[in-house]
Image (cartoon, rainbow over all chains, first blue to last red):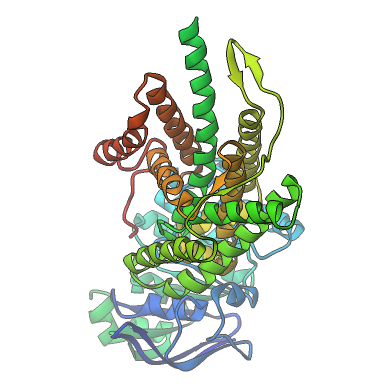
Length: 233
Length: 295
């Protein structure tokens, strides 16, 4: 479904991502794990079109997307929930969700809004509230709901557990599993390797811009090197 | 009684010039809100609008209304072209490069027009004619009433556009977080162009309203007007549209009241004193939100 081949991404002179290749097949949950600064967000932003790779290609359902601007990439069915949620804090909850459905016609948008409210009843209760006043967990739900408004085929989540209490992290991962069960393919970027590996089918381990390990998530969860480096045991 | 009628007519004057400042300040604030640029060429759009009105009335013999519409169209296009040619290539450059470019565009427009039309002022035929009304002992001209009415209508329209429409929502989204807005499918090039178009159109309307009372166009007319409107935008809180409106009226009224007490030579000085005080006491302005660094 998504195929990334040999991309190099730079910030000025800094070589942030080196010769990275990975793929996501339809119906999978794939996770990229690694420490802060390993290049995980850079990869997602490159797939989304916010950054341009210097070399390499990104293809989605057989079409090259690495030269397209973000608003075009989205219409192919890739949505991203960015790191730090980045909700529009001065807008209401509902306006945030409507921004998520920006590329879709009004009638479809209304239907998608109902779907999101059904999945996140908390957001429905707070639809008129200014988004900046929501709690961290609610903001994460809003960021996810907002991305779902675009009805993506592939949902990319960047550190959804960041800054959340353990109970909320569990809840967010439950939602990820539900979304997956409902037919959404998921690319998950996480520092919380334990949680990520426990829901994912396959995983790639990143270190300073390179993929150093890849395989079935269950196998990596048992791997000694992964356990000592990322799982703290 | 004489005191009150003088005061009242000065308040009308203040609201009239305040309307013009407010319309121009909206352009400064919208552009700053979207791309963090203090667009110092914005004032010169007023000047270009004034020359278009002057030319179409005196050279082409058009009536006032079509002349004003033509000025709006030309200014709008000019604003969009300036953004595409001068600012868009610098979108990922330091903000200072952008600011310097804006000052350069301002010089280019002022000196270009001086080269083409000469440094002297051009007299523009009356744009809005009508009787002078006596209200509460003060005389109120038709241009003053039209200026106020047009400004109020534009402010309501702009507020509805920004708050209620999809395009307005996209503008607010881009101004809060450009990257996140792009991830929602907003084409930022379109949104930025639209913002410049809107700001420039408002500047052209301000230009026509200005000419209706001060019927002269000159190459440097936009710099002082633009600078005062910039002070209005900062006073209101740059980036805030209600702030720009409020700031415009406050600056206009401050000028008029300084004149009313017989200190009209200090008119300009007071405006810049306001700027200094705002920057010292409340840099985020009356209605602006305190700046937070994005994480």
